[in-house]
Image 1 (spheres, helix red, strand yellow):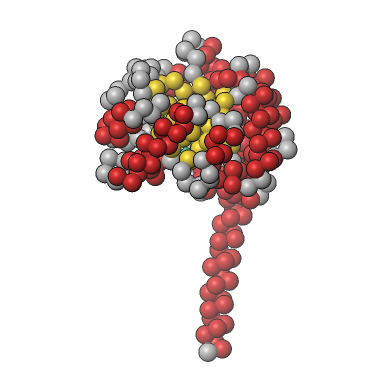
Image 2 (tube, protein in one colour):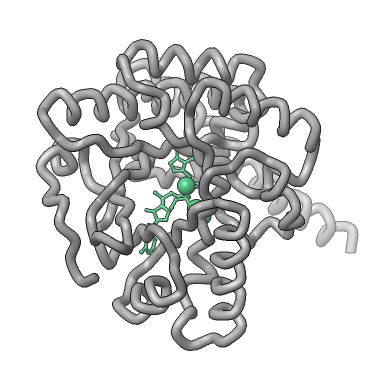
Amino acid sequence: AKDLGRANFQFFSSELNARLQERMALEAALRCALRSDGIRVEYQPIVDLCTGRAVGVEALARWTDRHLGVVTPDRFIRVAEECGLISDLGRRILQLACRDLSHWLAAGRTAMQISVNVSVRQFREADLIEQVSAALELAQLPPELLCLEITESVMLQDTQANETTLRRLKELGVSLAMDDFGTGYSSLSYLKRLPFDKVKIDRSFVRDLAVDPGDAALVRSIISMAHDLGIAVVAEGVETVEQCRFLKRHGCDLIQGYLFSKPLPADAIETLDAEGRCL
Ligand code: C2E
Ligand code: CA
Ligand code: CA
Ligand code: CA
């Protein structure tokens, strides 16, 4: 039994060791990517359900490492948060997104809004407000063309501090979206109190919309409640015509998903046909 215990321990510690090494390699590669412009951004169109036109895009970070290959944003954002690189990474993504938007505008594209994700730790950084205003200034963008997406789970803690940060961002003139709505179990009363302009219904509720009566009911009530509060609704992860029809019928304002377009490189957005398809 003693030997078995030791074997187990050795197995466990080598497993742990391997994971730790992988984490450290990822962290080192991420530092390197930040120094060498290795982080890119792609943009997914956000479409107005009334007109069928792309009225905005969401910036989504992309990273392909020479040795590690493609690392998904879920993964490298988490690592960046854990090792203190999120501030640098967040600032970089914000700058790239603002720069790309100002290029599209200079090239004659009609004004569209750009949405940038703010992670949990980034939202709590002391210099978030400065980061945002510096990025707007650098790209010479009107603040109302920038929307910050903050996940609902951020609102579960520290409500007083959150409220202050959100108000200060509103004072800058940027727009605010509550991301992944429906997953965080937060009270709907937050929406009434906090200065959000949009909610984004999480993909997990959109997926089975056409077949699951529970999800359908939930989505309908999010839409009507948000509208009563004067908040616009975006549905994420829209992949089928059925989902799209349901959302349109129930008054959803905007959709985002593979049905219209996958995330695209910046130059594809510049020339993107603003006319909708499939709607
Ligand atoms: P999110 O903010 O909820 O972003 C939407 C995710 O859904 C994106 O995944 C997008 O590619 C994917 N998606 C969009 N339409 C569809 C669809 O029709 N079907 C399916 N199956 N998926 C769809 P992605 O790019 O892998 O990003 C995953 C998450 O990583 C994001 O979720 C966000 O939380 C985080 N993330 C990505 N970029 C950034 C960033 O620049 N900063 C921060 N803080 N987080 C980011
Ligand atoms: Ca988002
Ligand atoms: Ca989301
Ligand atoms: Ca999500």
